Image (cartoon, rainbow, N blue to C red; front, side, top):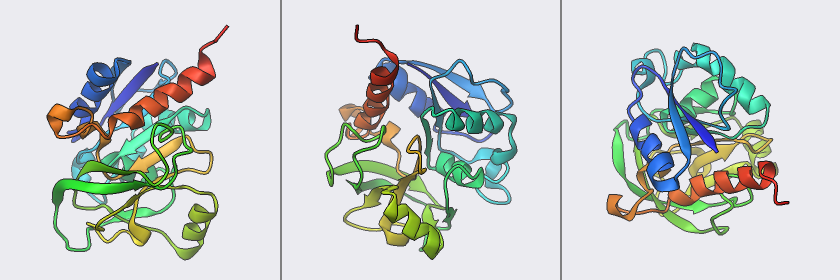
Length: 228
């Protein structure tokens, strides 16, 4: 499986993502600059964390208009897995690939620490390697991770089982319903604030995030690789 790590001006977690895919997962991966106009050669798309375009206007608001985002939308519509982490999650909401928005943290402070996440939905292509309601430890590093949506959207998220991760022991940013990660209705686009790529090796302090990437590859191989 071949992954694209999208790099915007201001991305700073692209190296972490690349390392997790290449060195921990053992899959193909390439950096793709924000002005690229063709993602057809990739099987999965990864939008890393950081401060794309300096988070001017709103976090992710300018990135949404990059050439590459037209191709990310095409990839999502084609059913390819698209994962946005932290700033990548913010970009996905700005692009309309995921509902809702990310607001300033309730305490108005940037936070960087490890939190407990609950795997609310383990029936997605991103979470099949986890157990339902499993508690995992994943780092956060954000100033605008407070997920918000209107009541109608929240009802839809619950009805379609689109809430994938919630904060378990504490809600660090004030997110609605403790939401830490959601998928689109089709289930192939995941946005989450915590950083699984920073929890891909025990040397880094924990490896609970690696199962997320393993889940993606497992689903892809079951779908694309012949067992004949």
